[in-house]
Image (cartoon, rainbow, N blue to C red; front, side):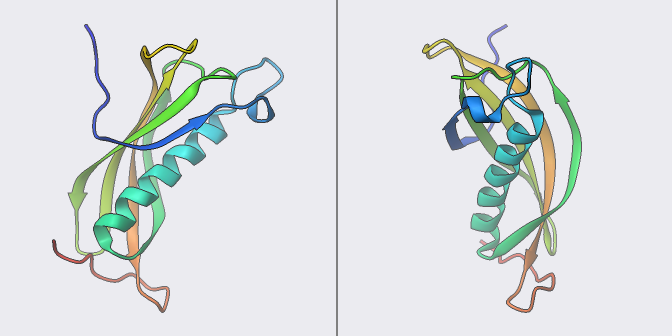
Length: 126
């Protein structure tokens, strides 16, 4: 089975030694942060407004991220509500300077669109 990333490539960044735990693996929190940033980019483009993360559902780490891996974050909008947007986010890595992609985790993020007053506002229609 040759699984492919779901959604569109939103972020591509290099995992650096400063982001590692004592075992040499990249901190899960760093990966989560990159996924949150990617989901935020996706949701704010769709909402045409600032968005904030309000929920994260069922994140499960499949494989570790290593120093030198290129982390690739893919996003896909799953649902658009009145003020909220659910975004499916996957993190994959390119390992060992190859084009081979390995899935490391995925989750559903929920974002809420905010108006200038900082309160929830309707998501613009396309």
